[in-house]
Length: 567
Image (cartoon, rainbow, N blue to C red; front, side):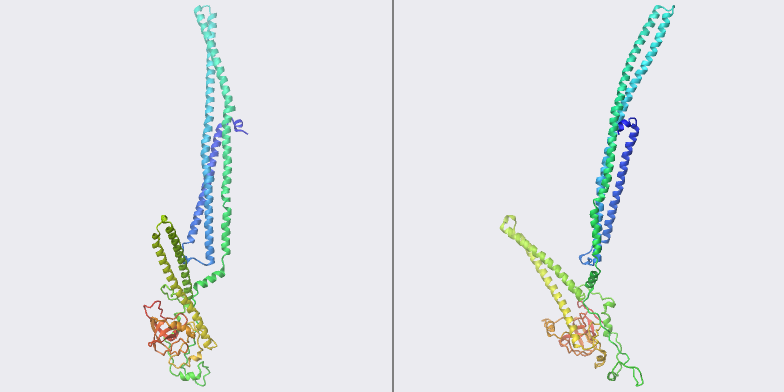
């Protein structure tokens, strides 16, 4: 159906309809604009959320737990998802909103042109109608004047009193009016014929053509709306596969959470390498009580020991080794804070070993880079020597020398850290040997371990020690392997003194590597307790060896490196 044939007389209504169509298209464009603004704001908020919960961290602080890694994987996938929302907004902005706004401007210009043509055609038809109407009115007026002149002529012609000149004058006037009426009639007929022809052209050619153009314009507008509806949906559909991959990535991250792995990481992160403290010994405060034969109380102290220890028993000294030991039970209290040292000696053995190994790996990577750079510079130097026009070989020598110097520094650092690492691993193995040796030398059925992390004799042996004070439990004896202590004591330079100690009890030092000491004897400390219950000391005579840490009262020098006093 055509607007030109069916709506030939609805110019004003078609004017309103086409304006409504353009307004509707612009309204839809405004809807798309608000929709893409929502997408952009949504993507921006998602990115800000990801940035908020994924702060920048140094390499050492990167989380290793699977739950943390999975969460950061979820954040990365969410960041990619936000990127897809931005793609949707961009597609809508260019292929829907931008296209609609450009098309709207074109429609407005085209509609204005068609309506102007319609108005011009209508104005021309109105002009033809006015010309026809004017000729019609003139013809009507001339006919009336001709009729009046005819009546005047007839009256004078029949009047006997009228002169001949008056009759001739009336006759001439009659003929004139009749001639003018005939001319008006011909003019009116011509104008009427012309108007009818123009009116036919107007309603059969001009208006149908203009209305057909308006109809085509409106139909194209409708088609464009349908296309943009589809583009609106396609913008969302195109990102669905990538969004699906993002969601699949989140699911994969969830499946990667491993509680067992996280537990093992906790162990690796905080394992100190120390052994747990053993049982506290029984301290008998009833030795000073007199027992009668009628007492039904059974004493845990053998009779011979009661006879020998009849003297007043020792009073609990606030500096008793059992009191000092509590300061080392970090599990039940706050570990003393030590300054960070280059060799990580402030860390527990296991953590120190890991940090040293990590540093060695990093230095090895840097050394490899320097070696690669040296090789590249040497190759470039060879090329310059063969082709002097490409460059001066001597200009590369400073850089090569600098690289070689850096390599030497890195090798020195690696050797130093490997020495520390070997020291840690050697001490850990020697402590294990000492524990094993203590098990072989002590035949105590209970095999109790002291708070210093060593095995003790049973309580009955404590009362056979012929000294003023009750002796604390000894740590496990050092390894009797002579090679171990030969290596430690055969250094050319003696170890520096880092403190001094006073013997609280006598120690016989029967095992190899241990040092005999008498009660109240003052010794020099040359190596502090590494957590195995033994302290390396030196007598004033120069003799060196290990003594039980719990048998001495230690005072460390304030300026000694990494010194810790257990008092």
